[in-house]
Image (cartoon, rainbow, N blue to C red):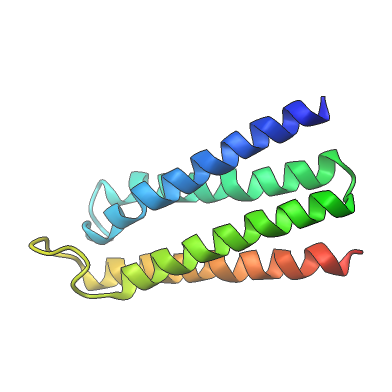
Length: 131
């Protein structure tokens, strides 16, 4: 049963990363008061929840085993790299050539991605502090 949970968690993790990579740049194209900004932001938040949830499920399913901690640390490092990449892409003004971007939306998106990166670092520290 634990291996099935782990497999489903890895599928959720990959799905969450795909949502973050594909949906997050759409936030910069919309004004923050645009009607489609909120559903796109909800998709980004859902992707982050899937990714972080997968790490929590694998940690809880195996009771914090050392090998699982290493795997979770690798997943968190991958998530950290992707979150930082998305943040830096969001802060760049000419991200989309020929497409107008909104400064406030880019700042909100970049701040959210930096917050995700900070949470990933915090969980990474807690992951090995519990040991």
